[in-house]
Image 1 (cartoon, rainbow, N blue to C red):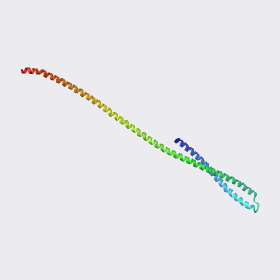
Image 2: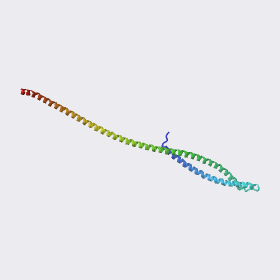
Image 3: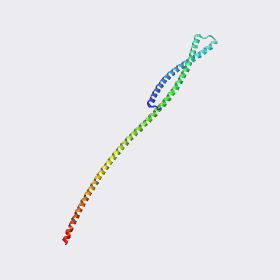
Image 4: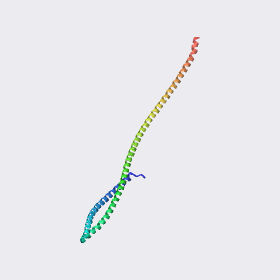
Amino acid sequence: MSVTVQQILSDAKRLASKLKEHDTAADALLSQAQFVYKKIDAMKQYTDDLSELNDMEEGGLPHEELVNSIRTESRQLQEIVRENRILRAMVAEHQTALEMIMSKYRSQVSHLVAQTSAGQLVNNLTAKTIEEKNALIIQQEERIKEMMAVMSLASRLEAEEASKKEETIGRLQTENQTLRKLLKISSDLSAEKEPDTILAST
């Protein structure tokens, strides 16, 4: 199934829109991750404080309110660690999806560029072919016109030559007939004079 340029452009726009959405989601995840990291640092400090208080319990009674607060923060720390794992998984999933989208996008863009270049080349070749065909047609038309003119001239010359030949033949025939008539008249006159000459000599 061939992919048209319009389809590739549509897919590229759709992928670019998805890429923008994923970038926005990634920025949000990074912001959340930074917040989580800050919370983790704070919870680590609370954990250290809790360890110190546990050590203090051996020598005396800790402040209950502080211990309860630290225990609460410890539970929050565990929840944040769990959320952090989820965020890390989401970031990894986002990176995988982003790589797939970018790979498909680059592939389609490369295909689009190649198809566009091929289309331009085909258009140029087609235009050149059409131009050559037009030039060839014009040349052929000019040659046909020249051939027709030559044939017309040759036909006219042949007609004129044939007419001249016919005229010449007719004239020669007429002259020949005239000469024959004159020769006959001359012969007749000669034949009429011969008896007169014979009688005069006697």
